[in-house]
Length: 166
Image 1 (cartoon, one colour):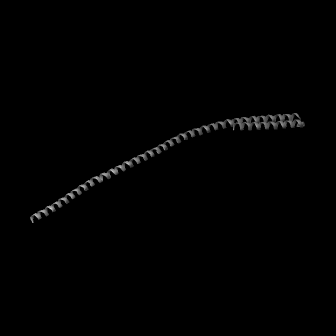
Image 2 (image 1 turned 90 degrees about the vertical axis):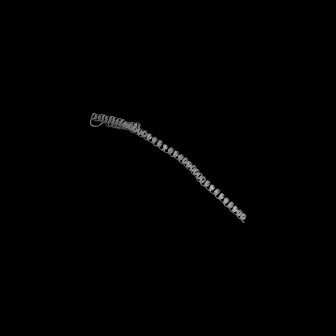
Image 3 (image 1 turned 45 degrees about the vertical axis):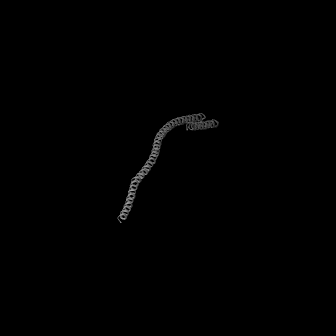
């Protein structure tokens, strides 16, 4: 009985040892998984962070490019605005000078026409007084015709000068 007992005890002991070895192996595997899985997750997260940072960096570069284009556009607009202002100022100054010259020329032409009209009136008056009160109708008609032609020529000269300058 003792041998049977010893044999049963040895079998039980072997079963316990085998269970303890299995528990030890399970504990070691659990420990390995516990250490390995967070490391793998950390690596995956790190990889995703690197990828996201690269994408954000690329987007930042794109936005910097767009910002640079806006700055360049604003600079071009400022330069063009300055150029347009200068061009407009020069055009207005030129137009003022041109209108002053045109006004002066027209004033001179009008004065010349006024002198011609005054001269024609004086001639007509002289002619009428020589004809003793206008008895010479042919002379009066000729004087009136000359006056009309002179006035028409003066008006045409003023219009031609105005159209030429304008």
